[in-house]
Length: 270
Image (cartoon, rainbow, N blue to C red; front, side, top):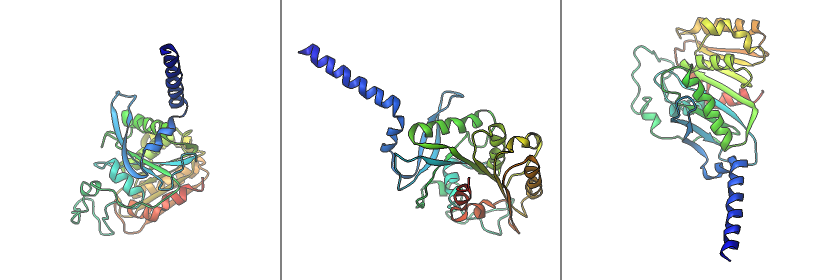
């Protein structure tokens, strides 16, 4: 009798193990919907790294979802980044000057990362890595982005033909770099406050199959570089090149680029 029970238990545990191996995204049912923080395992240094993710309120585990990846700027973080891609970051306004900016009470980068606002129900999963803070998006932080994506794909049904990339300032430059070095991954990109220079400019031909939308303010010190990048993307053969500039806006054009969820609407074309 004991041998029979033992045999049955072995079969049950074996079946359970196989179900976890072959259906890893079943684990996503344990996660709540909306914005939250998760961690992934870094293959670069074998550490656990944090990222923020938005799961649609109407989430269906049987459905494939497109994924939008957002790369934050210098001295920012994943939580504020996820808020900003929804147009829900701290408001700096048209008079913003990066050199003498004093945030309104409750509107500093730190303060607005302490809570999640109500986010609309959209038909996307969106994610923002911390990517080692302000280290840029080369080397280990670059690998972090792809490790994060692998973690997300292990939890959810992701449409691998609809991976989109956007970011602002340092993250805008990171958007361009990651698309140039791995053009096979991305369906479309949208760099904000970022132009083409150096190695990225030399390798822009790698983007010949990727739609691009550039956003920048005319008072941004990087305005001319971003403006001139339009012709470079067109010369590279990008199938769609859109350029939006905001007159009189300084280094905060992301407030307008991401307003009212516009970026999700734009990505939906590709």
